[in-house]
Length: 338
Image (tube, rainbow, N blue to C red; front, side):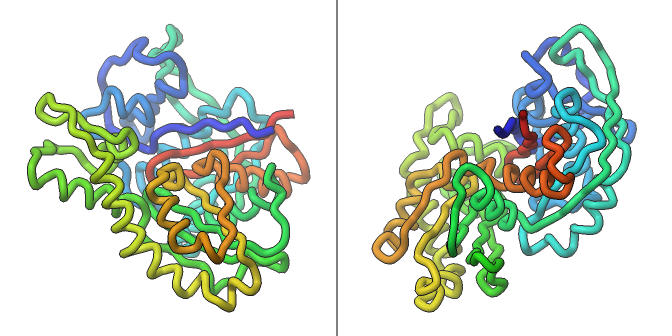
């Protein structure tokens, strides 16, 4: 059984007194890093002025390191040390960042945090020893989850994963993945930026960035100048444009006639698959020739796969196996329960 915790990947520097502003640690992440206090996740969304996150940040970047600390803090009470951690990156950055991520993660972490955001205990620290680290492509993490998790997928199948930062694909065979079918391109941020450009023609958006607009994109509306602006039609149009301009052209060399002869099963995963308008685009193009499979809780699939990989690396130690997905929109940390 998986224990999954997820939070927004947004961060912001903050020295504000935020006592009892949150109901628990997950919603009250305030962490000390390199002599500065930062609010992370849901607390950054509610209390920050302009929370932010680099797209596909490197392991040496502030936001990446801070989000790792936040995720480890969340499992500090439940996981058994020393930890085995698996994490991943989009295929486009995986080789560049693999060694950097291993170096940053594989050590003893001292994490200082402010617990007064949700309790009366004030500033505290925890120590976490990370013994084993594996870094794999994110799409491979999805494939492991499909084959070894609750889906128990067999045979050959395509995996299409769409998140905020990247869209990726692969054909997974029983013998392994087909390298030439691995694609990594623009994610949902492309569509959010299109929506912002459309809105700016008639509305002042202030200093909102794409990350903050993503919340409005999800809800399907936004309050601008004290007016409720319905975004559903704009969202439908930009998702269709995103699919036609980015996803479909990139899949032409992946879901080919030859590859469809090997398998016609396609798993759709990643947080963007929660948008029915985007799913309809896949149905329109491939519904007659492929068997589309929809993954439950698609945003946590990669993290589940990472956790199962950690279980293998640790030699079956459930309590110390961790999956860490530092996403561009959401960070997901997953452990296993007995």
